[in-house]
Length: 277
Image (spheres, rainbow, N blue to C red):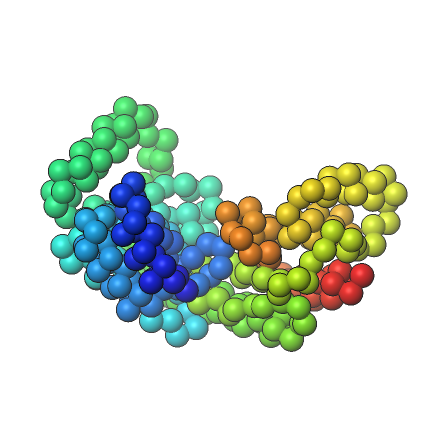
Protein backbone atom coordinates (compact mmCIF):
# COMPACT_ATOMS: atom_id res chain seq x y z
CA UNK A 1 0.00 0.00 0.00
CA UNK A 2 1.19 3.56 -0.60
CA UNK A 3 2.88 5.53 2.17
CA UNK A 4 0.41 8.40 2.41
CA UNK A 5 2.57 10.48 4.75
CA UNK A 6 5.44 10.25 2.27
CA UNK A 7 3.04 11.14 -0.55
CA UNK A 8 1.87 14.24 1.32
CA UNK A 9 5.47 15.41 1.84
CA UNK A 10 6.38 14.86 -1.81
CA UNK A 11 3.37 16.88 -2.92
CA UNK A 12 3.91 19.62 -0.36
CA UNK A 13 7.56 20.23 -1.20
CA UNK A 14 7.47 19.74 -4.97
CA UNK A 15 5.58 22.45 -6.86
CA UNK A 16 6.05 20.67 -10.18
CA UNK A 17 3.60 17.90 -9.21
CA UNK A 18 0.30 18.50 -10.97
CA UNK A 19 -1.58 15.28 -10.27
CA UNK A 20 -1.69 11.81 -8.75
CA UNK A 21 -1.74 8.67 -10.90
CA UNK A 22 -2.86 5.28 -9.65
CA UNK A 23 -3.89 1.92 -11.08
CA UNK A 24 -6.72 0.21 -9.22
CA UNK A 25 -6.49 -2.80 -9.26
CA UNK A 26 -2.76 -2.53 -9.70
CA UNK A 27 -0.43 -3.84 -12.36
CA UNK A 28 1.99 -5.49 -11.58
CA UNK A 29 1.00 -6.42 -8.03
CA UNK A 30 -2.72 -7.25 -8.19
CA UNK A 31 -3.16 -5.01 -5.13
CA UNK A 32 -6.48 -3.18 -4.71
CA UNK A 33 -6.67 0.18 -2.94
CA UNK A 34 -9.24 0.35 -0.16
CA UNK A 35 -11.96 3.00 -0.21
CA UNK A 36 -10.28 4.73 2.76
CA UNK A 37 -6.97 5.03 0.88
CA UNK A 38 -8.76 6.40 -2.17
CA UNK A 39 -10.50 8.99 0.01
CA UNK A 40 -7.15 10.00 1.55
CA UNK A 41 -5.67 10.45 -1.92
CA UNK A 42 -8.64 12.61 -2.88
CA UNK A 43 -8.06 14.72 0.24
CA UNK A 44 -4.37 15.17 -0.65
CA UNK A 45 -5.33 16.20 -4.17
CA UNK A 46 -7.92 18.69 -2.87
CA UNK A 47 -5.54 20.20 -0.31
CA UNK A 48 -2.85 20.82 -2.93
CA UNK A 49 -5.06 21.62 -5.95
CA UNK A 50 -4.03 18.51 -7.87
CA UNK A 51 -6.01 16.29 -10.19
CA UNK A 52 -6.35 12.49 -10.11
CA UNK A 53 -5.87 9.99 -12.92
CA UNK A 54 -7.13 6.52 -12.04
CA UNK A 55 -6.59 3.60 -14.41
CA UNK A 56 -9.59 1.34 -13.74
CA UNK A 57 -9.06 -1.06 -16.65
CA UNK A 58 -9.20 -4.02 -14.22
CA UNK A 59 -12.12 -2.68 -12.17
CA UNK A 60 -14.35 -5.67 -13.02
CA UNK A 61 -11.68 -8.17 -11.97
CA UNK A 62 -11.74 -7.71 -8.19
CA UNK A 63 -11.95 -10.62 -5.76
CA UNK A 64 -10.80 -12.05 -2.41
CA UNK A 65 -13.01 -9.69 -0.41
CA UNK A 66 -11.34 -6.39 -1.21
CA UNK A 67 -12.99 -3.14 -0.10
CA UNK A 68 -12.71 -0.64 -2.91
CA UNK A 69 -14.81 1.53 -5.19
CA UNK A 70 -14.70 3.44 -8.44
CA UNK A 71 -13.12 6.89 -8.54
CA UNK A 72 -16.55 8.29 -9.40
CA UNK A 73 -17.82 7.23 -5.96
CA UNK A 74 -15.27 9.30 -4.02
CA UNK A 75 -14.01 12.05 -6.35
CA UNK A 76 -16.41 14.67 -4.92
CA UNK A 77 -15.28 18.14 -6.11
CA UNK A 78 -11.73 17.18 -7.14
CA UNK A 79 -10.94 17.15 -10.88
CA UNK A 80 -10.04 13.74 -12.22
CA UNK A 81 -9.95 11.19 -15.00
CA UNK A 82 -10.94 7.53 -14.84
CA UNK A 83 -9.71 5.28 -17.64
CA UNK A 84 -11.73 2.28 -18.81
CA UNK A 85 -11.73 -0.19 -21.67
CA UNK A 86 -12.91 -3.57 -22.90
CA UNK A 87 -9.67 -5.46 -23.58
CA UNK A 88 -9.48 -6.89 -20.04
CA UNK A 89 -13.20 -7.77 -19.79
CA UNK A 90 -14.05 -9.34 -23.12
CA UNK A 91 -12.43 -12.58 -24.23
CA UNK A 92 -10.99 -10.38 -27.01
CA UNK A 93 -7.44 -9.29 -26.07
CA UNK A 94 -6.88 -7.48 -29.38
CA UNK A 95 -9.82 -5.13 -28.83
CA UNK A 96 -7.78 -2.22 -27.55
CA UNK A 97 -10.76 0.08 -27.20
CA UNK A 98 -10.86 2.46 -24.25
CA UNK A 99 -12.38 5.70 -23.03
CA UNK A 100 -12.00 8.24 -20.24
CA UNK A 101 -14.47 9.64 -17.76
CA UNK A 102 -13.77 13.25 -16.79
CA UNK A 103 -14.87 14.70 -13.45
CA UNK A 104 -15.11 18.37 -12.48
CA UNK A 105 -13.53 19.55 -15.72
CA UNK A 106 -14.05 23.24 -14.94
CA UNK A 107 -12.70 23.11 -11.39
CA UNK A 108 -9.30 24.58 -12.41
CA UNK A 109 -8.62 26.49 -15.66
CA UNK A 110 -5.39 24.52 -16.24
CA UNK A 111 -7.21 21.20 -15.92
CA UNK A 112 -9.93 22.35 -18.30
CA UNK A 113 -7.27 23.30 -20.87
CA UNK A 114 -5.58 19.95 -20.35
CA UNK A 115 -8.80 18.02 -21.07
CA UNK A 116 -9.51 20.13 -24.14
CA UNK A 117 -5.98 19.44 -25.39
CA UNK A 118 -6.60 15.70 -25.05
CA UNK A 119 -9.89 15.95 -26.94
CA UNK A 120 -8.34 18.06 -29.70
CA UNK A 121 -5.53 15.54 -30.15
CA UNK A 122 -7.94 12.60 -30.37
CA UNK A 123 -10.17 14.35 -32.90
CA UNK A 124 -7.20 14.62 -35.25
CA UNK A 125 -6.89 10.83 -35.35
CA UNK A 126 -8.77 8.37 -37.52
CA UNK A 127 -10.60 5.93 -35.28
CA UNK A 128 -9.49 2.32 -35.67
CA UNK A 129 -11.77 1.00 -32.96
CA UNK A 130 -15.14 1.20 -34.70
CA UNK A 131 -15.76 -2.55 -34.54
CA UNK A 132 -15.16 -2.97 -30.78
CA UNK A 133 -17.10 0.25 -30.10
CA UNK A 134 -20.11 -1.12 -31.99
CA UNK A 135 -19.92 -4.32 -29.94
CA UNK A 136 -20.17 -2.58 -26.54
CA UNK A 137 -23.98 -2.14 -26.39
CA UNK A 138 -24.53 -5.70 -27.62
CA UNK A 139 -22.08 -7.30 -25.19
CA UNK A 140 -22.38 -5.16 -22.06
CA UNK A 141 -26.14 -4.87 -22.48
CA UNK A 142 -26.61 -8.63 -22.69
CA UNK A 143 -28.27 -10.22 -19.66
CA UNK A 144 -25.46 -12.80 -19.54
CA UNK A 145 -22.69 -10.20 -19.14
CA UNK A 146 -22.82 -9.85 -15.31
CA UNK A 147 -22.55 -13.64 -15.05
CA UNK A 148 -19.55 -13.59 -17.39
CA UNK A 149 -17.80 -11.02 -15.17
CA UNK A 150 -18.57 -13.00 -12.01
CA UNK A 151 -17.21 -16.22 -13.50
CA UNK A 152 -13.97 -14.44 -14.39
CA UNK A 153 -13.69 -13.00 -10.88
CA UNK A 154 -14.17 -16.46 -9.39
CA UNK A 155 -11.68 -17.97 -11.83
CA UNK A 156 -8.89 -15.48 -11.10
CA UNK A 157 -9.58 -15.65 -7.37
CA UNK A 158 -9.09 -19.42 -7.43
CA UNK A 159 -5.88 -19.10 -9.45
CA UNK A 160 -4.53 -16.38 -7.15
CA UNK A 161 -5.18 -18.57 -4.11
CA UNK A 162 -3.59 -21.52 -5.89
CA UNK A 163 -0.42 -19.56 -6.69
CA UNK A 164 -0.26 -18.06 -3.20
CA UNK A 165 -0.41 -21.51 -1.61
CA UNK A 166 2.48 -22.69 -3.79
CA UNK A 167 4.81 -19.73 -3.24
CA UNK A 168 3.99 -18.61 0.30
CA UNK A 169 6.09 -21.30 1.93
CA UNK A 170 9.30 -20.53 0.04
CA UNK A 171 12.14 -19.05 2.10
CA UNK A 172 13.76 -15.87 0.84
CA UNK A 173 10.73 -14.35 -0.90
CA UNK A 174 7.60 -12.41 -0.05
CA UNK A 175 4.29 -12.99 -1.78
CA UNK A 176 1.04 -11.10 -1.19
CA UNK A 177 -2.21 -12.64 -2.33
CA UNK A 178 -3.67 -10.54 -5.17
CA UNK A 179 -7.13 -9.00 -4.82
CA UNK A 180 -7.59 -7.94 -8.42
CA UNK A 181 -6.40 -8.11 -12.03
CA UNK A 182 -4.58 -11.25 -13.18
CA UNK A 183 -1.07 -10.69 -11.86
CA UNK A 184 0.95 -11.74 -8.86
CA UNK A 185 4.18 -10.14 -7.68
CA UNK A 186 6.91 -12.01 -5.83
CA UNK A 187 9.67 -10.00 -4.15
CA UNK A 188 13.02 -11.31 -2.94
CA UNK A 189 14.02 -10.58 0.64
CA UNK A 190 16.93 -8.20 1.21
CA UNK A 191 20.37 -9.63 0.43
CA UNK A 192 18.96 -12.83 -1.08
CA UNK A 193 20.21 -12.16 -4.60
CA UNK A 194 23.80 -11.96 -5.84
CA UNK A 195 25.60 -11.85 -9.16
CA UNK A 196 27.04 -15.31 -8.56
CA UNK A 197 23.80 -17.32 -8.50
CA UNK A 198 22.88 -19.52 -11.45
CA UNK A 199 20.48 -22.15 -12.75
CA UNK A 200 21.49 -25.12 -14.92
CA UNK A 201 21.34 -24.43 -18.68
CA UNK A 202 21.71 -27.46 -20.94
CA UNK A 203 22.72 -25.64 -24.14
CA UNK A 204 26.35 -24.47 -23.86
CA UNK A 205 25.86 -21.69 -26.41
CA UNK A 206 22.83 -20.38 -24.52
CA UNK A 207 24.80 -20.67 -21.30
CA UNK A 208 27.52 -18.42 -22.73
CA UNK A 209 24.95 -15.95 -24.04
CA UNK A 210 23.24 -15.69 -20.65
CA UNK A 211 26.57 -15.16 -18.87
CA UNK A 212 27.31 -12.32 -21.27
CA UNK A 213 23.83 -10.75 -21.07
CA UNK A 214 23.64 -10.78 -17.27
CA UNK A 215 26.69 -8.65 -16.58
CA UNK A 216 25.96 -5.45 -14.67
CA UNK A 217 22.16 -5.68 -14.80
CA UNK A 218 19.64 -5.52 -11.93
CA UNK A 219 19.74 -8.70 -9.86
CA UNK A 220 16.07 -9.54 -10.38
CA UNK A 221 16.50 -9.19 -14.14
CA UNK A 222 19.46 -11.57 -13.87
CA UNK A 223 17.23 -14.16 -12.20
CA UNK A 224 14.59 -13.69 -14.92
CA UNK A 225 17.18 -14.38 -17.65
CA UNK A 226 18.36 -17.54 -15.91
CA UNK A 227 14.81 -18.73 -15.32
CA UNK A 228 13.98 -18.27 -19.00
CA UNK A 229 17.13 -20.01 -20.21
CA UNK A 230 16.82 -22.88 -17.74
CA UNK A 231 13.07 -23.59 -17.81
CA UNK A 232 11.62 -21.71 -20.78
CA UNK A 233 9.33 -19.74 -18.45
CA UNK A 234 9.15 -15.97 -18.96
CA UNK A 235 8.32 -13.59 -16.10
CA UNK A 236 8.92 -9.83 -15.84
CA UNK A 237 11.46 -8.26 -13.42
CA UNK A 238 10.06 -5.73 -10.97
CA UNK A 239 12.86 -3.27 -11.68
CA UNK A 240 11.35 -3.05 -15.18
CA UNK A 241 8.43 -1.26 -13.52
CA UNK A 242 10.69 1.45 -12.06
CA UNK A 243 10.64 -0.38 -8.71
CA UNK A 244 13.51 -0.33 -6.25
CA UNK A 245 12.54 -3.80 -5.03
CA UNK A 246 13.94 -6.97 -6.55
CA UNK A 247 11.27 -9.39 -7.69
CA UNK A 248 9.16 -10.40 -10.63
CA UNK A 249 5.60 -10.44 -11.95
CA UNK A 250 3.82 -13.53 -13.21
CA UNK A 251 0.34 -13.87 -14.66
CA UNK A 252 -2.67 -16.01 -13.76
CA UNK A 253 -3.81 -16.33 -17.37
CA UNK A 254 -2.88 -19.93 -18.26
CA UNK A 255 -6.12 -21.83 -18.92
CA UNK A 256 -4.67 -25.35 -18.84
CA UNK A 257 -4.90 -26.29 -15.16
CA UNK A 258 -2.14 -28.91 -15.25
CA UNK A 259 0.22 -26.67 -17.20
CA UNK A 260 -0.43 -23.73 -14.88
CA UNK A 261 0.28 -25.77 -11.76
CA UNK A 262 3.38 -27.26 -13.38
CA UNK A 263 4.57 -23.77 -14.29
CA UNK A 264 4.10 -22.44 -10.75
CA UNK A 265 5.84 -25.47 -9.25
CA UNK A 266 8.73 -25.12 -11.70
CA UNK A 267 9.17 -21.44 -10.81
CA UNK A 268 9.08 -22.32 -7.11
CA UNK A 269 11.76 -24.99 -7.55
CA UNK A 270 13.87 -22.61 -9.64
CA UNK A 271 13.71 -19.93 -6.93
CA UNK A 272 14.88 -22.38 -4.29
CA UNK A 273 17.69 -23.72 -6.49
CA UNK A 274 18.81 -20.23 -7.53
CA UNK A 275 18.91 -18.87 -3.98
CA UNK A 276 20.87 -21.87 -2.73
CA UNK A 277 23.41 -21.84 -5.60
